Length: 198
Image (cartoon, rainbow, N blue to C red; front, side, top):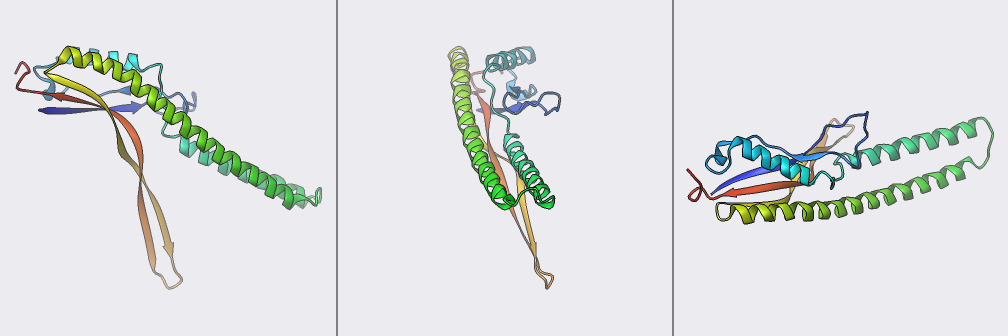
């Protein structure tokens, strides 16, 4: 049996269209010899185009949304501190520290509320994406049985490391690298080569 893994690929970020909530995602992989005897290059490209057309109206949420919310929170905090510091330095308000605490508390509550909303949207879109794509893959499995089996899986994929370094006054340096993961959709195509046209 041969296995072909077809990952979902998110379009590159562009500042012209801030596509955090509706990025274009598509399954893309080049034809390989594992498909020999089952699908020609043209038929395989046609299947990928059909899959991508099938999922075009059910976008996944961008994996960059977490960094966007973190940066937004950080910038908002800096702006609020600048406003409060500006009012304190001009002597405009004596309630500056109280205003600062209230604004920071509101920003923190908003940050966690946005994180919860993003997680809920991500989960709902992933379920809808899975349901939509599984209807098409079920049709493919009916057509290609017993030669091939198409299935959608969600796999944890490492995206980057979170590096933390610390040093002491005597010159000792220690660090910790923690891998960060996301869930990624992949189509797994199982081809039974004894039944294909090899």
